[in-house]
Image (tube, rainbow, N blue to C red; front, side, top):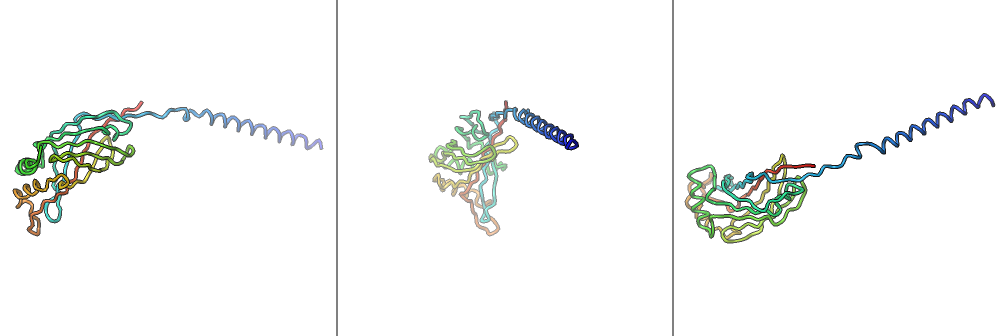
Length: 219
């Protein structure tokens, strides 16, 4: 019996040491400095003058794209936001159609005069953001577009990457009663709109891209 006592005492000491170590570990885990670091708060702001409006129209029966931009526009209603898209939640853009730039000096006056020139108030296009829904990376966006004296709602999507927000939407200009203007443009550019089948075709479908740069500021 006396021989068992030292082993019993040693066993109690071992258990006591283990319990003390566990308590210290729990204390260290509770006071982990990583848990005390507060999450940073970020806001986003528009980079003045960075807004761009690009369009893609389509010619030929095979629907080949023709790209262009508007070199002159004004953006209003910009505010700082908690997401890049929120910056433009109340934005409005006015586009001067005389600044149309397709990269072709002979084609641009025809677009200006024989397309926009055939429209009511064709010297300017207007777009207003009416709704934004999504997160930092992507989501949906709605516009009210005024063209040829007609207002129409347009649904699109947006994406954000590398400090640049881009919205994309598909429109049919016939929704703005612009079929006569389209026919006039196709008439003056008839030969240029003939594809491999010899047919002169200018589609009413247009893809719009509106982009802007934003700066992230975090506390």
